[in-house]
Length: 117
Image (cartoon, rainbow, N blue to C red; front, top):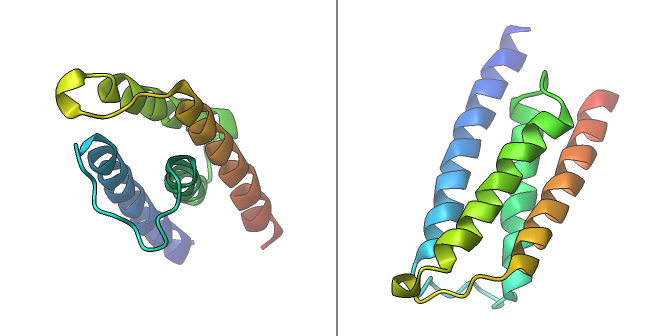
C-alpha cells in the first residue's frame, strides 16, 4: 500500500508540472516547434491525453467525472486566454472539444488498465 501511495504522489506532481507546462506552452505567442510538426489539434490531444492519464493514475479514488471536469475547465480556460489579442494566439472551440475528447479517452483507458492489474 505504501508503494502505491508513493507512486500516486509522484504521479500527482507530474500531473501539476504537465498542466503548468501545457498552459504556458498554449499561451506563448510563438511556442517552439515540435519535431515532426504535428498539427494544432494533435498537440492539444497529446497534452490532454497525458493530463488525463496522469490524473486517472494519480487520483485513483476519484471518479472519472470528478477528474474530467477540472480538465475540461482547464481546456476552456486556455481557449479563453488565447482569445486575448495581445497573446497573438487563435482561440478555437474545436481545440476545446479535442481536449475534452482526449481527456475522456485517457481517463477511461487508464482506469481500465489500472483496474485490471
